[in-house]
Amino acid sequence: MADEQMSALGGLDQNVEGATVIKQPMSGLPALVLSIVAILVALSLSVAIAFLLFDDSESDQSVANIESSATAEGVSTSASDLFAAPDDLGNLIEKVRASTVTILCDESQGSGWVLDLGGVADDSGEEALKLDRKYPNEVITNHHVIEDCVDTPRKVRAQTGPEEFDAYLYSWDEENDLALVAITQNVPHLEVSEKPEPGWWAMAVGTPYGLEGSISIGNVMNLEGFYVYATSPLNSGNSGGPMVNSLGQVMGTSTATLIGDDDPQDWNIAMGIPALCEGIVICDPTEDESWFWE
Image 1 (cartoon, helix red, strand yellow):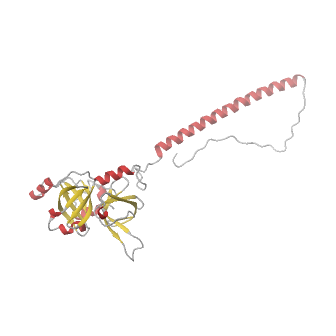
Image 2: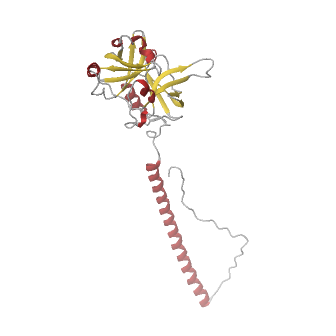
Image 3: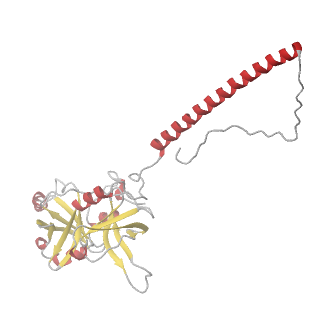
């Protein structure tokens, strides 16, 4: 069993102190009868001891089977324990990196993560439908990454490695420092996380100082409003990238680092998923409750 330890019961040791044994030879029938009785008693004891030993062995085997079964069924793996690192960190890193892009706007460089929003509504205006057909895939980033391109939406660029995507700045939310960039290429998308808890394992992916696909690992410190505080270090260029849990689900968009005399150490902040519903995405709580944190 996962939380209990079981051991087989052993025999009880009986110590008789102060007893005096008197050996008195006997002869005749009484001696013969007593001898026969002694032999029968000895045989009975031998059978009883053998039975006990056999039963003890069976108990040991039974306990071993119980413990083995409990280990197989009851021990949680890190894949389902969001406070622990993932079982296969290499695969998780590969998955999240494949869905993280670099966002460029004039001299500004940041990161972004791909989210499947399913396109615009069928009754949208012709211009919106035309843009959606040309740029069908969505990338979430920070407003401060693309703010110099607000007046020229087609100046935004997205890339992974040497490949540059045709991109368009679709919408933005300056108050919550978020933006939606639409791209032409198909890039794997990431799922969103339910409300994180303090202590959850956390990983940030992005392009700090131009180092594309860089990762940093830590834990969720706490939540405050839309803010997800984490110990995963963030640097210039991480802005807009995903902060994911141990299942590779996005808890928030890496946004800021607090540094200064008033802060005893760096506090790294990701803008939580519900903030997207404030000005970027039309959200329906009846369809996906994970978008709304209580």
